[in-house]
Image 1 (tube, one colour):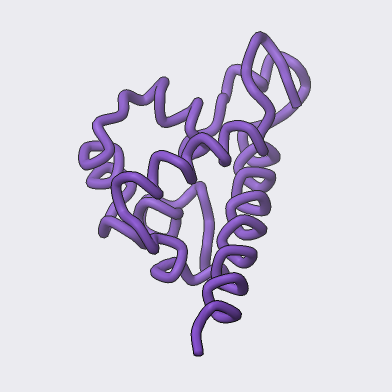
Image 2 (image 1 turned 90 degrees about the vertical axis):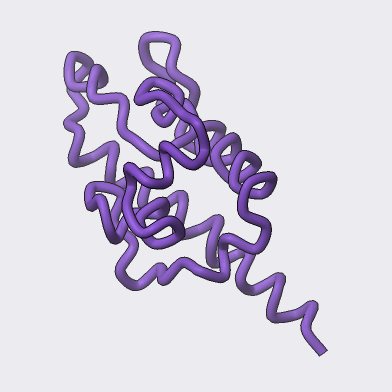
Length: 112
């Protein structure tokens, strides 16, 4: 979903995951994918890890624009290209859920 120069959702999420790896190692184990919702400020990824979306943005030292490029916030400019924010948030949520589930499964396999 590259539009207006924006990176694809998987690229943005990978960038966000790498940022979290540096700031909060083991972050994926703190996420409940059954309630994950990137449109929420408490059930989104940062809300679950840091208590609120805004605490996460502050802790990671990100601007709103940088939080978009790290997959924590939708590029609502995509509305101009026939894609609503609801759709982008659903795609972000699905990609984060995929990444988190994969990391949680890998961690479970690594445990004795």
